[in-house]
Image 1 (cartoon, rainbow, N blue to C red):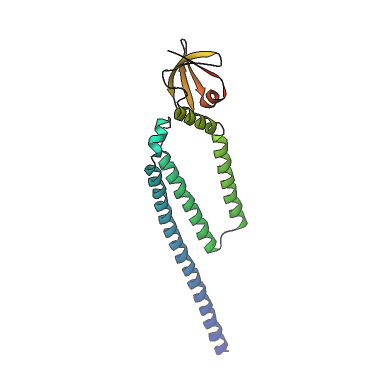
Image 2: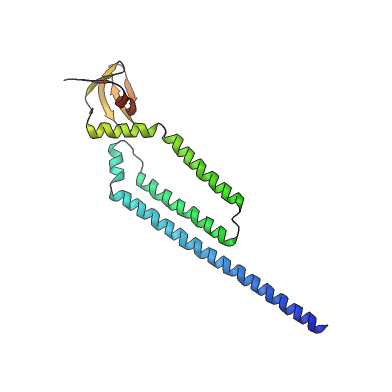
Length: 188
């Protein structure tokens, strides 16, 4: 009877030891994945930011009227995408990735895409039109134009809108309208 008990106790201790070693190994691997993933995320974010700086994105966008830093925005987006992916890989390694977590991740991605699409619905056409106006030199600041029955002097052209000064008021016209509608440019 004593042999069975010591044998059972020995196998039980061996099982517990293997279980803890397995858990400890998983925890160490997960911590390594998180550390490496966060370092990669930070480095990739900085690389994207430097690449955007290299092509002169912020000065170009400043000329178009956008004052916030798109270089930082793209760098941060890259960093957080890598962070998110790293956390998912770590949870998967722990065996905690479930259908619910996958549904939440898919929901967040779908919601983000929808929000970006909805927010850019009107901005993108105006931005492309503003870019075309600037590149082709269709109108310039100081030009006198008539559009949609209103006549005035172009005060400022930004990426998304043009400010036209009339005798009574300033009118802000979306750039997409200036591309689509007939514009009469007055000679000086």
